[in-house]
Amino acid sequence: MPDINLEQLANYFSLYRAELHRFLLRRVDCEQIANDLLQDTYLRFVDYQDQQTIENPRAFLYRVAGNLAIDHLRSHQRQKSLIADFDNRDHHLDQALLNNPEHIIDQQQQLQRLQLAVNQLDPVCRDVFIRSRFQSQTHQQIATDLGKSKSWVEKQIVQALRHCQQALEINQS
Image (tube, rainbow, N blue to C red; front, top):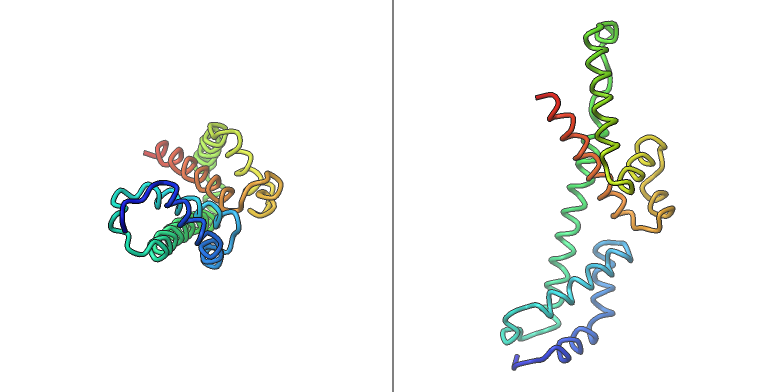
């Protein structure tokens, strides 16, 4: 491809924008995420340092968009896995432990550490976490209430879970 300027790059992108959007929407099944990935695709296309080597701009755009979609889906899967791991912890306690004063004190201290960790969260992150974990709202309900995407809500919950997990692990050391 000969030397091209920013306007020509924008023209290539405009030419394939609608079909790239449909492609991304089929991959991620979310309008907002598809829009975000489409914007990232454009930024990568414009920032690509070696424009002369792009022989087929359409194929290049599809490759970039496809890679971004794969990266997003992998990240989303890791987030879902972390949430599931946290939710699936064994919460069944042995009856003997429930009557053990040392265990009761340890659990109270752990609960206090958890409460402190939750209070240390950014207010928006804390709100999302409390709605999800203590008010039993679904991720979609929270997203709708806050005018955000479900993915954004899941990221906030993952951030909160990681913070709480680290706070509990640090204090157990």
